[in-house]
Structures are given as structure tokens and as C-alpha cells.
Image (cartoon, rainbow, N blue to C red; front, side, top):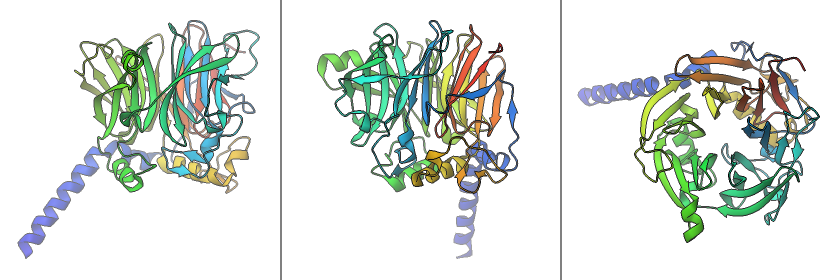
Length: 404
């Protein structure tokens, strides 16, 4: 009996040691970034929060740094409808939910302007946009939509002059049930991250186990739209499996970066034949370890990978849960106190923004509570401009290398 107990003890110790080792980066964030320990840091020039009365709860940004405009994906309804975190209080989206055009390079630019969604039969009240991407050649805007009826990809034709996004098609597939982020390789091929294998809508406990154990079940998939249009059902191919796949960004023709939120890391994958070639010869070649949980990714014109995310997961969870009661949803801004809350009512989820290059590694740009729950950072190198949006934050954090 003693021998059996000893064997069980050794096995338990081995499993515990393995778990701690493989989760060390994530566990580090719980200690180092806890309230009272996280130190504010900011090297973004002339940084400030703008448009607080215009946009709220924005998840993603597509930036065209050639022509100098951007589209923001915003959903104030996230306070009561977040399928990733398991909040299903109310699927109706507020009127201000939608896609916003920012003409940030226009000298007469004032604020982001909401795009009118035309030919969109589900209607704005059932629109919950998450990740977005754009194909300049076809002027197609692809949006991950966490609709009440299920997650799908929506295709819109963008007309910036008319501030209009005309709905073209909806794409759904069993391999897109937990779609989170999307990037267009061209007009015919998309790369999509699925943040879980088990959808929170239907497998709550299994989703929790998948998250907390960091099981490599989430996926990076390729959606071939040329086949979709020709034959009806989409052709979706799984390219890689990883824990909690989130943001996706293309570094070059053969390398793609995918954020693994629960592993506090960004995985770099290569495909010698290219990700749009119809093959699945994808290999993990590098893991970029972080001191925070990454959300979305972007690549600037210099090839630097911008990473936005969350220093302390419990703070983000607390902010998400607090929004279901409406208190956080009506606050103009969030000002953090020592315990990570504002007046004991609305928890504040701090942000972390960093950049990575193969030559210089990871460099922090912004850390702290001056702007909450950062999800995406983008940068226009030529114009010296940048912006960050937050999952549960009002406005946009902007910076500029020249004084306004």
C-alpha cells in the first residue's frame, strides 16, 4: 500500500512540475502583474485618449498606412454579450455597435465615422463584430461576427466615400465555430484563428478545462474563398493547433504569427510553399515569450510585430463580469485605484503594448492603467502615427511623433 501511495505521489509531483514548467510564463503574470505590483510605463510619444464619446469596446483595427485610413471594429454590446468569456446576458447590440472609418491622415479629420451596413439582413441589432481584415484589390472587408445564432464570417464591400459597407456574403463552417481573428492573404484566401476547440456557448466546462490547462486544441485555419464561391460550402483547412489562438498577423510570404493568449506567447509558423498555396506544410519555428497575455497582432511597414494584450487576467475577467450589470457600460472613463477598481464599482483591466523584431526581440511600449484592456495596436511608420483600442474601454489611445 505504501508503495502504491509513493508511486501516486511521485506521479502527482511529476505532473505538477510539468504543469508549472509549461505554464511558467502565464503563472508569472499572476504574480508580477498583480494589483499594486504592476508599474506604469509609456514611451509612446504624445500619447493620449481620443474619441471617448464616439467609440467604445473596440476589438480590432485594420490600418491602411499607404492611403492613411483605418477601420475600427467596435461592440458596446460586449458588456452583455461576449461569447469568448462566456457572457450571454443580452444578445441585442446597442445602436453605436459597428464598424467605424478613421481618416486619421486627413488634416480635416475630426473623429471616426460609423459605416452604414447595407444589404445586411440580420440587422445592426444582431451585429457583434470582432476581428476584421481588408483586401485592397477587391475592396472586401471581412469581419468575424459573434451573432446570437452562431459565429460566422461576414463579407462586406467597402465604399469609403459613401461611408458604406455593403454585405456580400456570410461564411459558416464547423471549423469556424470559435473564430476570433482574421487576416486576408488575398481576395480568395483568409487565415482565421479559432480561440477554442470547445465553444463556450455549448461546452462551458470543457471550454474552461481547455483554457486553464492550456490544451493545444484551438486552431489556425485557412479558408479558401475561391472554392467557396464556386462550390458553395467553404473549404476550411486546419494548419496548426495551439492553446487559445487569438490574433493573427502575416510577417512575410512564408511566416505567420499567432498569439497564444493562455501561454503568454506568440507562435511563429512557416510554410515554405506559402500559406495561400493550398498546402498544409506548416511548422512552428519560434516561440516569442511575453510577460503578459497577448490578444491581437499587427505588422508595421518596417516588419515590426505589434502585440497588445492583458497583464493580469483576473482584472480583465472582473471588468467583463462587472459590465453585465451596466455600471461599467455607462462610465465615461476608468481611473484606477490601488485595488484595480474605480470607486469600488468598475474594475480596471490594465493594458500592455509591445513590439517584437527578430533583431531586437521584445520591447515594451506601454504598460498600465492609462488605457484599459488593450486588444490591438497598429502603427503608420511613414506618418509617425499609431493607435490602440481596448475591449472594454472608451475611445482610442493614439500617439504621434509630432505635436498636434
